[in-house]
View 1 (cartoon, rainbow, N blue to C red):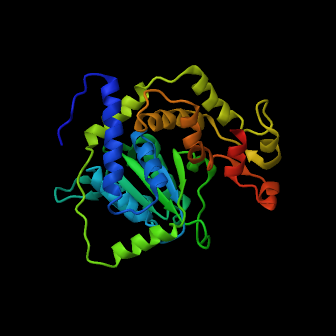
View 2 (view 1 turned 60 degrees about the vertical axis):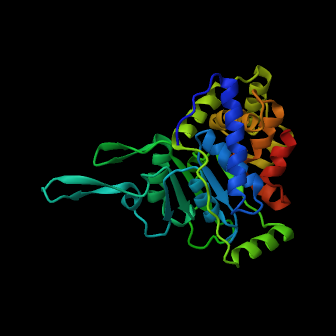
View 3 (view 1 turned 30 degrees about the horizontal axis):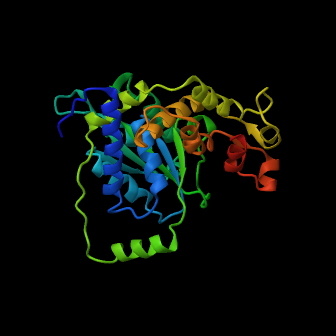
Length: 323
């Protein structure tokens, strides 16, 4: 797919908004409903961030990721995380070649989109190897650094109900994910459409809408989008208010939160708001854009205390109180 040069950044933002509309239309041929989830995943990709999809089995998490990779014209690999998975199984390893020299054999991480299926089923050692790749965009084998292809995204899935035989991700590792995206059951009407489509012989030919080069250009463009000082301050304020015991913490945060969001949350709130504005056809984000993505950025970065759990106070309730 040829790269299109834009005369100005305004024209480029218009092209990004059009690409987003085309993407959602194409994805909608296969994925019924889940519009907010699709929107959040695309925002995280255009912002160069990774996403964690949390939902019960059967909500099309895997299908969603493979469909997105198809319309984005990117290489896609799926890794099924299991308790016996070793770091070398995902990063690759050195093997002795016919010439008696060691050669690096690339693992499934060497792809544009990596689906880490049921990430909490694998031990911390393998989780750490994946999270190093997410942060550094490279892997180190036998002291040699191997760069991963660009663009590179990890879309991990997690089942929130079945906790037997799982290794929950520590907060420091969760912080590597830009978004934590909850998936809910479809509505009755959506489920009718899903069952109708999946129990017939109907097949869809998906078109490639955006190339890897275009995604990299959009990632650059989003960083260039100007943001007003009051919106930037609002985003940083939102993150600092989640920290109990600090001057900006609200009463609700002090009562129900034991740990708040770090500075990475502020960065992602600003980047996410810029992208949300761009796909909505705006050239600069406002406070509504920050609020639109705040839940995804903050919900896995704040830790509730026992009192919150006992009283049924969710992370979402705390975040809503900050608005």
